Image (cartoon, rainbow over all chains, first blue to last red; front, side, top):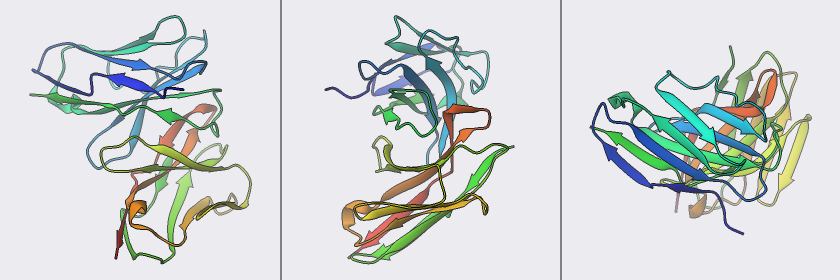
Length: 115
Length: 111
């Protein structure tokens, strides 16, 4: 079946604009994660969804960042009033369960550039 | 806090064996994962160790010592396609549902 997909693949936006990043997880996966990766760096956890539970937002860097997951499937990460430091690759992952050892399947990412 | 340390770069030649080390500091421990990421690509899962010892999967093996807060990824019979970044990761303390990643080790395999 299809893997995790993300759109757009690239997004260039002006400082101060809002952006929406989309993630389509693998069908049937209950857990969905958003990470951010700056150039040459590791992945930084942002937010986690598990089934119908309240999302774990503990990794969101500021209140300009928000995310939702509709119908337990598609997720949208929204960044309001973008800043240059928001420039990074935003990666979405999904897994069939929510345990730490569970393999996370990553999408190709959205490269966000804030000018 | 929680942190992971791994070397930033490793260089090796085709056919050789290379070991990428990872030390971690966590207030709770659930296991150590390894991911591979080629330039411009998505991370892909390689292995997960919850218990001490060596786990082998083809040319790749992963080792964990919980008493030493240490693990490593062993790559044998290196191929050019193994050139990539390798990340160790541990679940957040108290919530084994999200991962903390190390900064990654960039492996360059030369002919």
